[in-house]
Length: 627
Image 1 (cartoon, rainbow, N blue to C red):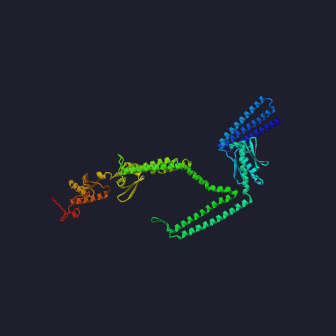
Image 2 (cartoon, one colour; image 1 turned 45 degrees about the vertical axis):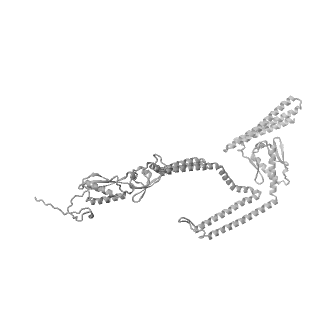
Image 3 (cartoon, helix red, strand yellow; image 1 turned 30 degrees about the vertical axis):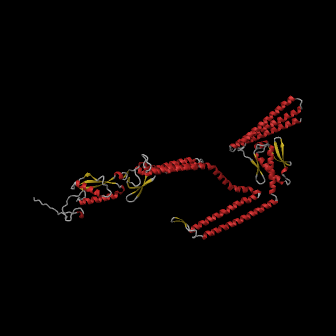
């Protein structure tokens, strides 16, 4: 009869738990709209469902096992074969139980890193241990809160000792008991979560609870409080004196600074520019002194507060928090630096290698520029711009190699800034980019070099600078004209200096003389004038071209070779002077093209110093004719 009553009660328990689980599930599915959950929460919910199913099956198997054990007892060795059959069923149930435990362990292992534990809080807001699983209808959080409240009630028992707490084991659970009160129940799931047995886990929790209660009693007795208050007063007195003498120290430093004005403190000069005079330097030093003073005071207070909070057990967490504000960032920074060291070393190695690659390329370019190294088809004036191009390409390749090792290079913000800067560079430097490309083309076209006398469009002068963006020309009037390289590319360019040192530059000028002067005499006069001109070379000889035969005159063009293309203005001026002198010496008048030979009675246009001393102007001849 007792056996049947026990089975009936067990069946009621099973049905009640099943109803409870069903209600719980119904509540979860039929409640208000669910908030968004992450994958870990979904995994935990799935684990709870699996756990409930396993426990439900475990409860059913335990009832069945109890029924089988009761049947074996009722047989009392009357039927050995039937007892063996019943024992075989019990062994099968035990094997299923072992398998369920292993399955629980596997499920728990998958959730160990993602599941949040709820702490059991001690007397001074310290965590004694964590609870991860529910028990019956109590969630892990509810269990932790209930245990925390029960632990705190233990401090009111004056006769409490560490031995007052006991561990009792009932079937698959262990209870931590104080007198008639159960402080906490440790289930099989709790033990599996900590990878131990229920009795061992309960003993460990019992020791932590007992130590927490005893520590609280020792920390809160009247003598301990009196010592802590006295120590706190001592700390306050020390910090008061420390701050007082810090202020005095910095006042003394301020007076010393003021007394050294125009003595040791004479101002700061950069060459001839006075960056700070003595007065401003004193003011700056006083400001620095004031900033350091307040920083020292605040640092002293910041260090004192954790010490002060650490005296009393209720405020020790504040001390840890305050120290954490400084220590945690420092630890994080040091940890980040330590973790970044391999990448930093890689970057340094890359920089080292590329640095010496650039040095090698620069050495080759300098050798080519100086003419020590000759490469067929490669001119020395190409060495520098080619080095600059190769240098940019090598640096770009180095940046690409380093990019992946830069902290934050893969972050969206870093990439967004890079794209934005690239966008600005592309669209903001469109004109500049065309000038740079034109500058490179001009370099390899070798239109001119520094010092050449050129004519670019309407600009005439000497090239004084070739940059990547502009070409600068100094005119004979000492005017500096900057021409964008793209304009140079689109204009015609005349280079007077490129062949002048070897082949000579032909300078030329035209003189118009009347038909009354024999052309041979005029040729000789112009050649003589050219030979007299300084900087005109003797070989090849000057020559004359008759460029036109006009109505009233002949156009004679004198051509002469010079090596100094940059001195054309002086050479032309001297040539014109010599043409005048030689023509005057040979009695050749350089007259207006429309001059008419009505010379009777008029002086010659030749200057007096070139005329004979007995020269007289001819008289007018009038011829009369009779009809």
